[in-house]
Image 1 (cartoon, rainbow, N blue to C red):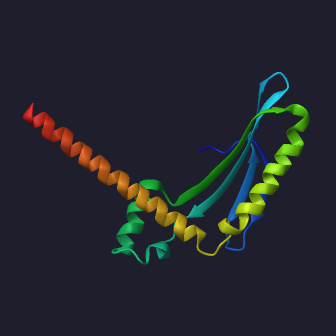
Image 2: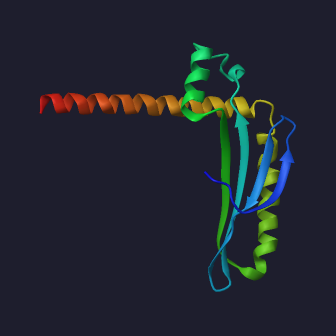
Image 3: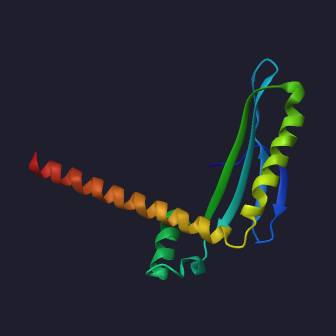
Length: 144
């Protein structure tokens, strides 16, 4: 996902990660807007995150080969059909609400590791599904 829009804040977190908040709002019609706050946190994949895996080196290599060396945590908050006169107030409120409810979670010491392992599990599951799909197609073609 590409990050565009106006950078509202860049926050250095206690766990060493950096959180970026972008305003990606756009006009809809007349004086109405779609307010969009995008939160991104780049996460460098580290081999140490895979220490509890059956084969840590293989898990690290598989994920970095497939997805590269950096993952991106992304979250979007959206409000539709906002009057232009309320734009600044609501964007400020959305930003404040997000920071109050989620900043501590993202700044937790094990956030990067948990997020990386979650992405690895999702990638692994998708790989298995794709392999099974290819095998089924091949078997069907051989019978046909």
